[in-house]
Amino acid sequence: MSVQERKERERAGRERLILATARELAEQQGWDAVTTRRLAERIEYSQPVLYSHFRGKREIIGAVALEGAAEMAAALRAATSAADGPRTRVTGLAHAYLDFAAGNPAVYDAMFQLDGGLAFADEDTPEPLKDAFAALLESLGEVAGDGVHPGLFTEVFWASLHGLATLTRAGRLPPEDTEPRLELLVERLAMV
Image 1 (cartoon, one colour):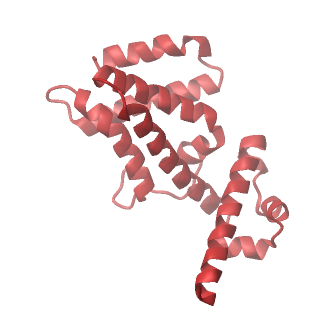
Image 2 (cartoon, rainbow, N blue to C red):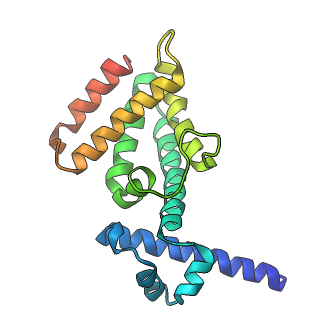
């Protein structure tokens, strides 16, 4: 291995450490607790080393959002891959989405609530975000209905899932009614 390859591997390792530490801190104490000073202390590198990887918290949030999008896409595909029929697929997708949001609240916030400097619904949208949407579209496009644009249907269904996730987490919807809400969403919106 050349010196350059070793340096690149070490740099990638530091980046993974920074992001893992930011995620851990955000999940434990919220994103307000994630500062470059705290991250530098936790990873035992100086702030200038941290800044050599990310220009600041906004870029860290963006990088966490991209990681989260890739993880969400994988979770959605895993939940729908073995499903037998459209109803089971859409129900599995909805459960996987809400489970991801509930199990990774800080990552979910980085993806959809915080400014990570990422473009959405644009030609400049990063590939992991496009792929997460594609993972939704793969299952929802088939149930959009005649004359309904599959992408628009997917956006509306996604918006519904996002609303359920954020309102439940905020305590505005009782969690014990999640299942009936999902049944209603699948039956009435996806009509499967």
